[in-house]
Length: 259
Image 1 (cartoon, rainbow, N blue to C red):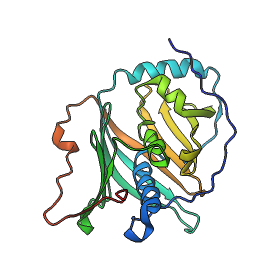
Image 2 (cartoon, rainbow, N blue to C red):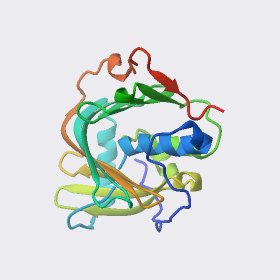
Image 3 (cartoon, one colour):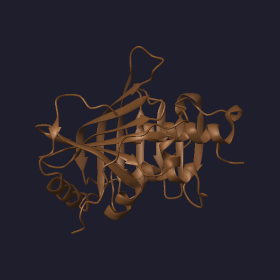
């Protein structure tokens, strides 16, 4: 079995601020990248650990068992509570939602009741849909030139890694902490460009069954997002229609990254 080769790293801060609000034409290409990434990763990954923790006594054994569990994952769904913390707000923003994942590269996230935001990943593109605004944003996932967007796309798969060597190539290990019931792994993107968006990523999984319990991210500007999952269902059939955008008539589709 491949040994766990993440390098322990000291956290860094980066200069660019994330842009969690909707992208607009005035923001231009760079603003669209930051906004799209902020929303997509904000839905998919997220941050802040509560409760007392201690250093994991045998992280290698936990990682080996966690990776073994990943190979059996075909589909996954859960209810979620998303907590979004911004420096300009005294209280965090809390939303409920639902997520569906089909390995290796499909997901659907819905936030709000009724649904206000949908993030949907297909093979070669990703949609962020706003049903109440009758608006959708489309982002390419193939033939992306080298740069911040390409580096940041790699972070989308951090919650459900399928390739251990690739995961180790993308991230440095910052810390491993164990509670009575969970193992909390904090990593940092190795890419300097990706760190301009996201400074740290947290993945929390239960130690009894190694199911995903929470994912979190900390943006370079100090804001953070966290998803806590409940009512998880493993390997139930999910038809292709779950991952189709089904845009309503008259929906305005924009491509923020298009020149």
